[in-house]
Amino acid sequence: MSKLSSENGLSLKQSGVRWLWLAALVFIVDIGSKLLVMNTMEYGWPNRIELLPFFNLLYVHNTGAAFSFLSDAGGWQRWLFAAIALGVCAMLVFWMRKLPAKQKLANVSYALIIGGALGNLFDRLYHGFVVDFLDFYVGSYHWPAFNIADMGICIGAGLIILDGFLSDKDKKKQVVKH
Image 1: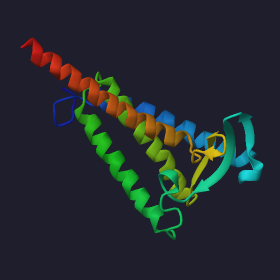
Image 2 (image 1 turned 135 degrees about the vertical axis):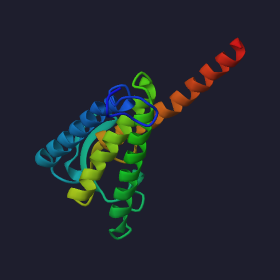
Image 3 (image 1 turned 120 degrees about the vertical axis):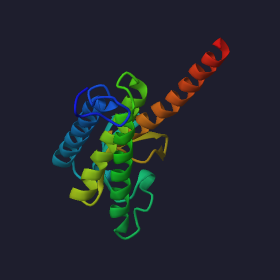
Image 4 (image 1 turned 90 degrees about the vertical axis):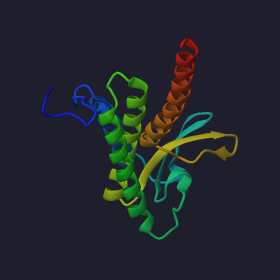
């Protein structure tokens, strides 16, 4: 066994951490898309780019969390959300070290969340806000603007839920067979 192994006997290559390349990809695409928006678009609603009857590109800043939660809290929330992001990333990497790499759905979901959390963390620490630019709407109702990092987090969370359902289904099949 290699010297680098997790507590459960898996080498790092056999563990879920080998899926961290996906977190890096989400991070790079997120930061790249935000830089593109910041360098090519004017800030704010009047400068939106209408692409489809239900979708705009709209460069905005979010000092809060999801749906601008705590955006008007005065600045302390920046550090709270940074600490939460770091804590969640550390916990997910810890779990990935314990998971075999072949448990793809769980590892992919964790990697998507890590990549998204690190993308938004970078924004918070570097800019003091998160850059959002994807604006979906129906009629006059607009979903809060979001970014690629947010998509990674939401898709990852959805995959965790799906994995939970699939794992429960597999456990029930095993019980029935015995």
